[in-house]
Image (cartoon, rainbow over all chains, first blue to last red; front, side, top):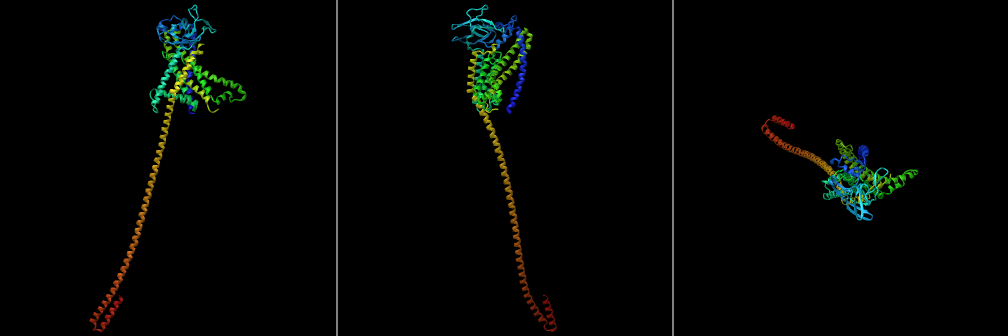
Length: 393
Length: 164
């Protein structure tokens, strides 16, 4: 009963936050509508436009859509500051599995080109990069000097038709995620060692900062949903919680170690949701499967309920993956859109309002970073709890 | 839309990295941390329970002490009461004894006095008789010449003797 009360108050708080959030999502839609009116797909222009303010290149038309998608997407290089050859960029290694051969080189070989104009020949194969993806290059360049073929799909978007090698590169996302793992390992191994050193004593320093959060995960996330079985799943839940939270926060950082949109990438959320899915599937007991394959409903409802229940096994992790991805990506898009208002109106006078709203949304994003980590963890705990529950209602 | 199609490379890296993270943290961080937290909570619980027990023991001892004090006080009162009763009985006994002894002494004294009185009377009687004989002798000696006077005197004397 006590746990339930805590949970209810949390849910209420979440509802308030989500109400606020949905208001801003509505706002985002209008920002997008404005953006679409000025959209004119061109990767180079978008990339240049990032620094239009500083370089006085106002004459170029600003493509907000590709600018934002460039930001939230993955990349083979990590720009610390400046732009292109004028700035400082960390070129990340490219690792390709191309037609049975392992091909590695540094992404600096593309010389900042992102529309297939630079061909890298390695291991007897030619590669070109377009829109931050690596393709097998054509033998000859087209009229624009690009070694990749473009076509326009039915939505009017320009897409590259060339084949792609399997790309295992250390991209911006991979780099950022590995960095977050290193940070997590260092932090929690230090915390663990201070628990060993100060056995039975009150926590101190980093340990006392982390302990309330660990206890929050245990007492407010794991125990209400898993009961006495919480202990077995604590390592997974704690790892997921801190991993998502740290990556959300790193994503909000506008400069170097952060800035990558790790948790806003479907590849990561799919992996996390799959872990939860595998745990619920393999740890599920006979009551769980009994509930799915023989739901406690009148016999004539069973033909309807059984497919629904089986469908439910898959929709739950899919919802988990989409929720985290959509929330974080939406937050990034929102902040970028607000900042882009300056370029859309092409006026410095809009900057104060734009920055005010961007900071405001940024602060809400800090909250969302925590809330999304919390929601992912509590829903994982809930699904696992449903799968391993002893008694049957 | 590009966004919704996961990149194979990212999937592989994320899977490997996340599983390694869960494994390493689980083995070297969460396990000792959760154990330490659990142990400490248990310790605190134990300590609180022990404190509670000690408090109860303390209360028990206090009440026991009070009980003992009460008993001791009762015993003391009892002993005092007994002593008082004993004293009273002794005094009473002594009084009774003194009375009876006194009575006996008085009785003895009375008997003695009686005896003495009797002895004195007997002696007196003896002396009176001697005296009487003496008087009679003197009277006889002085007044023996007058017969009438002799008679009168004898009569008077005899009268006196009879009065005695």
